[in-house]
Length: 303
Length: 293
Image 1 (spheres, each protein chain N blue to C red):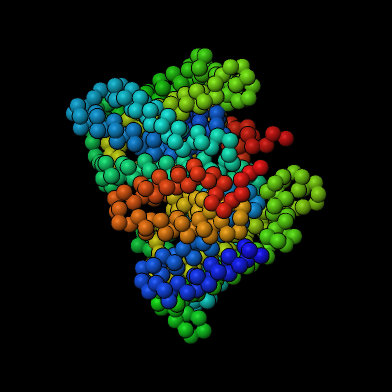
Image 2 (spheres, rainbow over the protein chains, first blue to last red):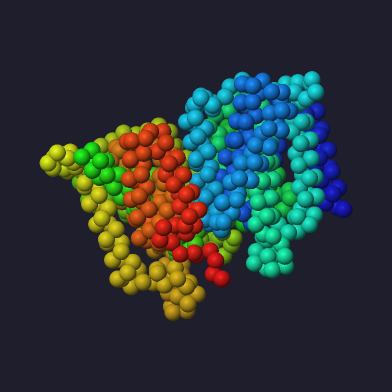
């Protein structure tokens, strides 16, 4: 009960934020943090719930971003069409990719996903007729919902915040459902899970598909908010940063990835005044957080 | 005959990949962890060697430069182990992974601070010019690189299989608990593993310097990924596999760049990696280390 109250208060705080702080810079960081929270949550489902360490998640984020950006700029599909297509296409690619890749286990799975991430980035860079190569896709329109343009940082902030809350509610239900429990059995002991009748591969494929779709949602939001995307954002390093968000926050908790995403998205901005030393300190802080709380900030100590 | 020239070019590049992959796979073999900042140790030692060799002395003979690179890299590698990996010896495998990425960020940005974000061009003398063998144009630098790689791999093998320390390292890789019961101190062994693994990268950084004559801060990350792919291709934790994987990757890249399209150089290597993983999930020579059942 205490936890619910705390979460409700936190949500209220976030809802009131634009009234207290009017700086569009702060709101911008808020929007980015919410988008990365959704991305981190999608990876958290794989890493924290099923113990599938994917090191190529930026690929799904990127596929979502490109799908939405290209459909709305080239075909002039409305925003919602782009968003839904982005989710469906990334989910489909996640599904198709998961069937062969899930034969791999542990470290080998991470490598397979990493390689996938690199291949996707190279395609983004080189398939010029579609992705416009290194120049990326400019002029991605603001999201518009039923005639209302989300053309300001504050409007966008509320939109992504609502989506984030919806994703959180959905995931919290999912994790408590039989599917979520099956995920956790698989995480704890795959062999034991299969002996009690859990179809391990099916659940893994399901998890991968859902996770990819969710990353596609984050990608679409990112493209429409930034108005410009190119291959550079969807690098292997980005995949690792998302993984870092999940781990820093606490990987098997629901809110962990969100906290991790907020910390690691805000930190570079807080350090901005230190210009040259910024990313160096970022690395130091990342190492320090792990040193002080290896289980993640919200994670429970392993017994 | 161009094919043969390309093959030599590929083997020289592959030899360098092999050295980095060998260190990577040695560390994986002993600790069962991906050393994500291995490429950055490679890059950082490269900068230090250039600073000492090119900007300090004007030039250094290649063998001395290689030894210098190995020594510098060994020290950096041990430092990285102490800071980023030792605290997590008993924890979940994903935490050292992230900690390694933190370390990678630190080294990369330290390099940017010290040497600037741009590319630095320099020249390392290999001592041999190009020469002709029949109708084949041989590149002297590449032959020297290839030979150096062979010698280093040979010495490494001797160390690992014939010396006491090498045996202790292998014993720890196979069964850390029994090894420690036999009086082998794991902390010491891990430190040695990092020193030797990094020294191989330190040799590679000098050789790749002789090959390209240029370095930039994110060079390590991309070379690290290549070495990672190479060691996977051969089979994780398998030393012969790492060398084989490095050579295959180098040759594939040069041929892709030469006969298909330079742009797809990286992608084809990675695609083939995925293919190999799907057909032989443990790499060409690998045995499964994940499942003991």
